[in-house]
Length: 130
Image 1 (tube, rainbow, N blue to C red):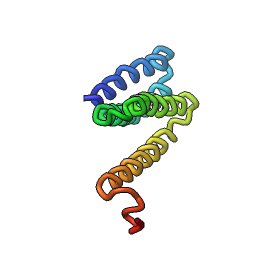
Image 2 (image 1 turned 90 degrees about the vertical axis):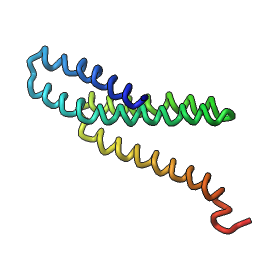
Image 3 (image 1 turned 90 degrees about the horizontal axis):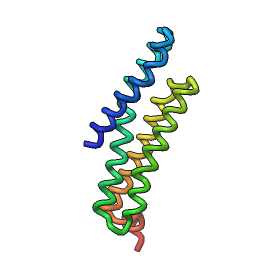
Image 4 (image 1 turned 45 degrees about the vertical axis):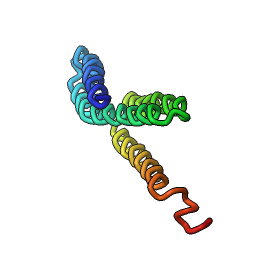
């Protein structure tokens, strides 16, 4: 549900960003804005809201870490979204997708390590140390 909201928000935000070059009759900027914002931004907003949803789910299931999880649910999407928008505003939009993929890879690796700790126990138990 959160990912759908994120993508819906991206559509509205992208339409607003597209209005400026269209009203200035700058067709090249409009085409660039359309490509970068509508293609990459929709994907990015899905990722942002998915990350937020993960941490909100974590907050619901882990009462003792609720504040940290809620803070992460707010902070991570804001930081990622702010970085994405800053790159676009600075004219470095083509770096946004690789940065988004690196960010996503780091989060997936972190999540995989957390899952391994749940399945296999702590790092010391998997190395044979007592």
